[in-house]
Length: 326
Image 1 (cartoon, one colour):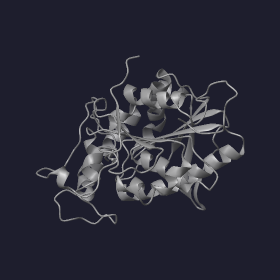
Image 2 (cartoon, helix red, strand yellow):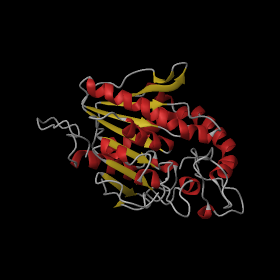
Image 3 (cartoon, rainbow, N blue to C red):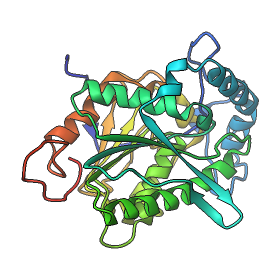
């Protein structure tokens, strides 16, 4: 396999306005006309700022299109997805709060994928697409799971807020997995799912450590890993690899701004932790949705698992130190 053209740095930023595909599969992004996304800033409470493009105006322009495309994508899901090897565990907000309808399978190597905005309609196929490229890179988990959560809503800010609850439930699943004798967990999240996996690490109780935290096109500000809310949680992972592309204009338009970066577009404008690496895949990833099933991304994840120091990557040797991923 040809070595992917990947650059690892410790620089810049990430968002999530998923399904930037047309019905014919051509990638696109709808941005309000006569505005400059590079001048956009936003406030954490969702209020409009004085700059011409805000996250609210961007999402207002794209929301209806995203919803329609999500339905079209779901309707065209291949029949093979009905017989997937990827198990689905649903996380939802019920009468007694947020909970999961199942447990992670206890095995030596478990891949866990979390989708983003409107991704619940195609969660299984997204998880498979990413897993296929990782397996092509040489790493094959014993079990594969997708955590499906209710992300199909035009209320983007509500979905963004829900990622914390999803991450907390995922952390509970991880703790149960380790308590039951499980081995290594490889968490991968796309877009808002990138927020979910970072929240998962942050919500873990003391004494637990995830082997893998790999956000793809994370819908977040770079400052969120440099400080609150996620920096302290990075120590609950053996290795964090943040995959970002400057071609991800979806995240780039909605996060970052003059004094911050978009995590999935530029990476983090700081050195968050010794176990954190920004992986620049701009040369290989052409859009926000191109992270899913991208060969270069999958190959890098596989290489990091197989060549790293945290866990045995599925090797059948006796040197497993109950460590992590890389």
